Length: 253
Ligand code: FPP
Image 1 (cartoon, rainbow, N blue to C red):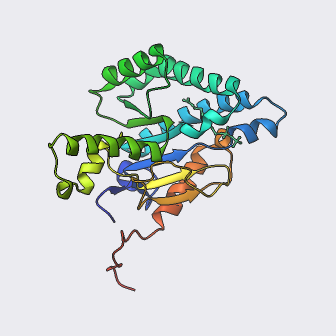
Image 2: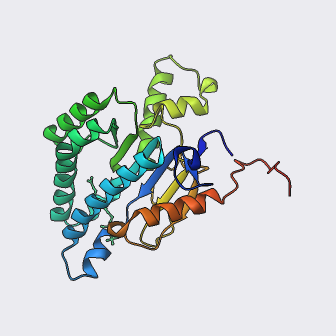
Image 3: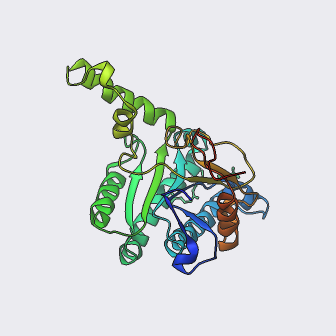
């Protein structure tokens, strides 16, 4: 068992289940969920927020330490403007209305992604939420919003290049840690498990540096149908994987 996992039996949950320290989720399929029911796509997103609340509860209950959710990608700007506006309003509403519960549940909230396109009200809300939950010691909930892995690396590269140009850093002193410190996720361990719902099998520019050695689990259900049963199935699949990080398995045949 790797150091970053604990046997869930210790926490009174299902025996033998390995609990990843960091779970990341690509919450996909809200639109298809809605369309299949003759509903508007936006109704799928509303159900998606309910599924997100279920996931946060599950992460707390199963002892996950860091949970990252992909809630708006830098590519999602290609959607109709009304849908984009709706998702922005949902984030606003989720953060504002769930803050008290998150604080009560000892959750630390971090929102990662590009801030440039966000309005001042949303930026203030994000800063307030991060500040008000900064001292919580339970689950760290990382919401990737207006996030893209390539632009995260681009921003990090610019910051490092500026340090080199100013003479604060020599190119030969740039290490993996230098890059990690320049990412939005600095200080957060890499995800052990990335789950994607809706049957799509790709990572779509999500945590491309951090996910280099993550186990990937693809789930057929659309995001609004995500349940405890889905979560446990993903954890069971993860528990059966051998993580070698480029090395070899030394635990016998
Ligand atoms: C993917 O479904 C979902 C999104 C792009 C938006 C994600 C939003 C939520 C899950 C709600 C929680 C959000 C916040 C802001 C807290 P899709 O629309 O890509 O579905 P499709 O692939 O079936 O069209």
